[in-house]
Structure formats: C-alpha cells, structure tokens
Length: 490
Image (cartoon, rainbow, N blue to C red; front, side):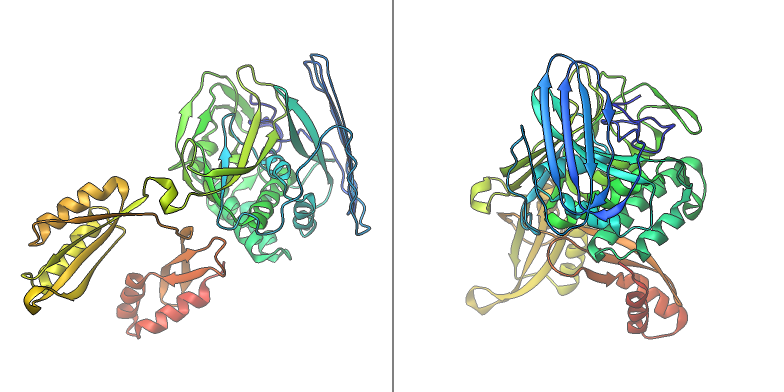
C-alpha cells in the first residue's frame, strides 16, 4: 500500500502518495472557515478533523516534536465575508494574487510521488488562498463531506496538509455523470475545462484497463467525493495562478495493493495508463507513490517534464502526505519562479536553420519544406529575396527543436542546392496545445485547442479533415470549418 491511500477506499483515501485522506466527514456549507492544526511528532499518527463551511478562516497550529506524531486538525467554515488567521507556530508568506504565475514556471518536484490531496496541500502552502478551493468546491452539487487544512512535520519541514473527510456512503458515479456535473456546474470556464480534461484522462485510463466504454466507466474509487474535490480544487488553484506547469520524472514504487476488484500490482494499471508519455523511474520502495488522481493531474497540466528546470525560484510550497516513508520525506514540493531570458539561459530550446539559394525551382523548394517537416522541424518556410547582381532567390528556413537541429540541417543540405546552412539559437514561448475530436453533420473533425494564460483559447479545426469532409459531402470547405467551430465546446 502506499503512503496512506488504499484502493479499497475512494481514490486518494489510501493509494499512494501521502494517502489522500482516509476520510470521514460532513459538510455544512455556510461559508467561513476555522482551522486548527495540531501536529505532534512522536512516530505514529492519529488524525481527527472536521469542517463546517462558512467563509472566514481561523487557524491555530501547535507543534511539538517527541519522536512520534499525533495530528489533530479541525476546520470549520462559516460565511461571514471576512477572514482571520491566527497561527501560533507557523508563519506564512502573503497570499498570492490571481494571475501571479503569468509568464512564470510552476515546478512540481515529485521526489516522493504525487496524489490529489498533496497537490492541493502544496499549492495552498505556496500561497493560493483556501477560498479559491472552497469557492470551486461550493459550485458542485455534492455533499456529505468536509474539508480540513492542517500542518504536518516531515524531516523537520513544516508542510500543509489537506484532507476531504467523507461522512457516510457516497453514490457510485460514472464518468458520464461526473463530466455532465462539471459541465453544468457554475464554475469559471477555465476551471471547468481543466477539471474535465483531468477527469477525461483518468476516465480513459480506467476505460482502457477495464475494456469498457468511457461513458460507462464506474468510479467506485475515483468517483468518490474526495477525488472530485481534489481534481476540481487542483484545477481551480492552477487556473488561479496561470503559470506554465513543469513536472519532474515520477518515482514508481512496487508491491501490491488491495482494490475494489482484488489485488493489483504497483504502480496500479490506471496510473501506468494515465502516465503515457510521462517519464518515470523505479525506486526500491514497496509503496504506492503515485495515485490515479495525482497521475491524472500532473499528466494533464504539465507541458513538459525534466529533473529541474532552468528558472529562478521565488516561492516554495510543501504538501504533506499522510504516511511516513522510510527513505524520504513524504512531501510534494511546488516551486514558482521566473524563466531565464534568452540572454540569461545560455542554451536555446530551438534552432532556426536557413540557407539562401538562387538556382532551385519552386517545386524543389516545396519538396524540401515537406522533407524538413518530416525529419522534425516544427515549421518550415520559403522567403523570396534578392541576392547579389540582382538575382532572385529564396531563403529556405526551418525551426527545429535543439535535439533535432542536426537532422534538419542535414536534410536542408541534402534536399536543396545550398552549400551551407546558418544556425541561429532561439527560445520559444508556446501555448499549451491539445487536440480534440468533435462530431458534425459532416462527420468527425479534429480540432486543435491552444490554451494557457494568454487570453481566450485559440481553436482551429484540422484543415485536412475539413477538406476531406467537404469533398465527401460536396460542400465548400468553409462550411465544414464553421460546423466544426460550432461543435467545439471548451
């Protein structure tokens, strides 16, 4: 089993990373929050928490270290329109304002893995206001739970903890029901879109594991209220910051865990499927370090993965898992910082390669552009120029990721008449992109959606799909484009 979650509980109430709250709880939605966190480190842990939601916050944290741990935290929420924080031990940086991450990097340092509760804990510790989470959760038509924020000590580090305590049995929900609930809830569009993307990734993983239609997937575990809160809360916090998310490679523990359907190997099948394309590495630890909810969150929100990005850290937050691990602190670290300028970085993410040619036909130039794209250039183009003695000519250019620059340069030399290639290192800022498929009266059309903290999303139907559908149905291609745009819901 993992740090505290177990597959026979609703997700993230036992699987992995720090155990996303074994919960019992109730919810009173009145709007203000009182938080009392007491952490005594004695080597074993007892957790007691309850929450009433009312809207302003009182926090009391008491910490004593004696070699084993008792954690008692109580959160009460009442809605009176103001907030008061009383902290006897912990001091906290000023809360972050909305959009504080615009143009910056939010790095998820997952040295002990990731779970849904740890994600919210770390973002709260970073400085995201608790009210951001509460407002998003309050927009959902769910009940029978309460929220609890407290503090925990891990290897001398004081971290924030976050639990969803569930009271009584929750209904079993399908992916279709959850997605419809999120689509209908009065959430901010950016939050709803991101939460639905995370749940879709999770649903597609479960669908693949159980070999059943996506809409019919039953989430005995993931559909529980705690996972819904974790995903919507994480989406709200990440949308609030507006930063580019970068993740570190994920550690994979081994062993077995008891789940709704029996004994499963670690990492769980749904986790492995969620992490398609995400770098992972094995650790010598029999524990579930990455939960399905945590896997779905980081795999959806991260634009890339690296051990540590090149950036200047500005704020750090620690989110605590609930289990003690024998070889590492059970924490998720998030770091908000500024990326280097092109001058500061000393290295470039991309390279512009180009050559001037005055003895090549347009047909060969077109073929060269196709060949450059085929070997890894992200873009290629031809620009008319005038060379010495007034000769008309072309500049053939290609933009390539730095690792593919040599292959693109070789192709430029091979497929054109040039005898040399110029290289200009550059860095590129790009919007996170994804592809969806929409159904129209002309059939299925793929649509590119570019998002991120750069204003409204950019939506562009795949022209090849639109052209093929237009030929099939004998209509102008612009009619298919319009139909695809009308069918796109983001």
